[in-house]
Image: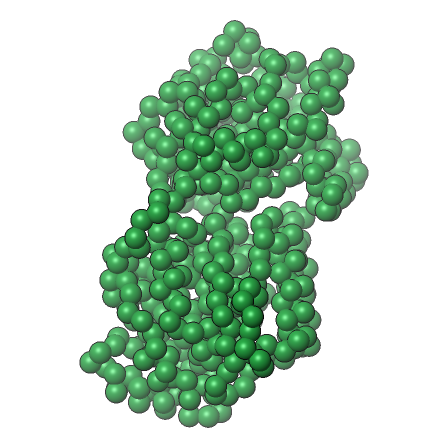
Length: 465
């Protein structure tokens, strides 16, 4: 307490001196924080981080009265409280909790993490930043030569140490990202090192800052039937699969609607959809629309815009992902196992002719690319079955301007959008079936080049941001 009270007088000046380093922390945290979110910073100091974060409601707590006094003077729009991290007393929960460069000073890290449950709801996201233990000697030397303000003896936790402490406190880590090789601004060189070199395999583990993303661990409970479901089925030249899609789709959720979006078919798909909707009107809620634009992404967006369900699902009309597995996606979402759930076709053996050899190679390449882009293992990016809450999709739509209209298929738009919203992405292995009717609408080479172009575009918006 004596150290931080004394440091409060010079804290703002020190942070201004190293503004390049601290701005990057705020910038990266803001990447995942939506304007409508409520945000709490634990150990806010003089408020520079929470004062520059997005959010409709921002609260900072710190155990030092001097720090909180300075924070309130600098950022009157933020609510600050004198409060120890070891004893949090707030009458609300938050969408995002940020703990930046604090765990090194805590006497009982696990005890503080346990306190966070008081201010978490089931979908709260926690962002912890801490120094890479490989930098201990460098930072100690920087203190001796007065390049860095001297501080108390710190805990030097590895990412594995912190992940274990979060696990013991009832949280699960779903992403860990290293960032920043040069913590001070050297024109041109710092930008080159921190935006590009720091992202390279091997080199990335030498970065100064580690960002750990966690959330309350889901309870193993039976899936609730309280959520309504909308299953969107884009259909182009799939007339032979329409009735099967209706009959084979299991009933789950509070209510279910099936939404067919027909996309300029050259066969009688639209007529068959109308016939099946009339045939099963007494047993199923079936809605339909014709697509004005082109591409699967446009069809999915139209279907999602029409949907009334709490849970949004995509089922490809070719039925290569069988409708019978959709309850598993629903269960994973509503039980909190993931915030964005998608299928993976590349785990189980496939039926012959289900996917061509070059397509398999392409999918594996994009699997490696996405695992690197998103800092988590991704097995299959192009499986058509994807599931999320409608409330998250609305945020994704309002956030779409960040990436722009770049994806005619819709898979990357949804995956990158989910990442930007800081949602936990999980995959469910499914058995990929061969078509029983029609032929694929995908061109291996033309569309493969387009997918590669989208990956390169996304790397600029994600990895080199």
